[in-house]
Image 1 (cartoon, helix red, strand yellow):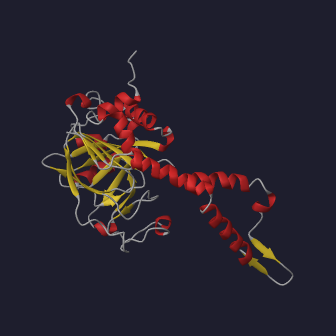
Image 2: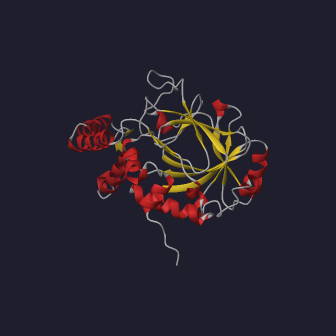
Image 3: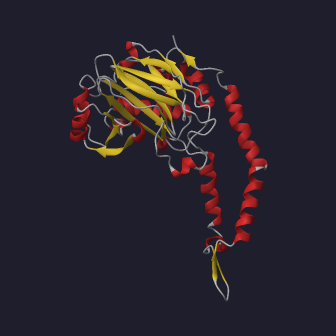
Length: 320
């Protein structure tokens, strides 16, 4: 029976010069990490799928192939999913594609995903693996994601443009620089173009070659391009744990629904007319929320998150 590597062993293989412990510190602090790999880190994974033929990899993929349509950056879209044969046709036209659920195609990628989830303390359902396949000269425009990502370069060379997001931490939705579209949730706390939210004028260039790895915290600006003379294939291990706000709202809703009066319609009826969301009750709700946001729980969460940042590295960690 083949021995399954432990989580720290996998993290150490992906980031050999940094190691599992320092990687966890970087994840907690929200700092990006790059590390150079060795041929040893490619063993097993290259034999688990036809990485040497990017088009075949796309065409044979049995699950969703997500298209990254970038001909007009301000209208960048990545929400169109097709099958493998259609994905291969778009790949021929120079479109980067994302092979979803790749951990179900490559047992090695699945084992790595399990180990990453365990090593970072994230429940496995919140983690996923996809393979990004980009024709030469193709890639993604500058954008940020609402998830942490561990990237492993399998073949080809991918050039990254990277920059800290100084105007926003922990976004809950993706955004592409210059895009006309901002999700409703993101727009509630982020206004692109306003002071403090400017797109970075300068980015750090980083080339990932086979065996190299990168950790990107959620919200980090990045853009990519398949560099040199061959398509780029990389694995992306996405980590999207729910926010504290989402956890709190779920628990609060469960408690509220247990009471008859919280399940009642938000309408006041009297002999003359009806009124949706009576102003006096809405104001009481707002006061209760304000009190909660200035109370003990809010202070405890603030201290938890800021302490995590302080324990992390002061700057980007880069392996030799």
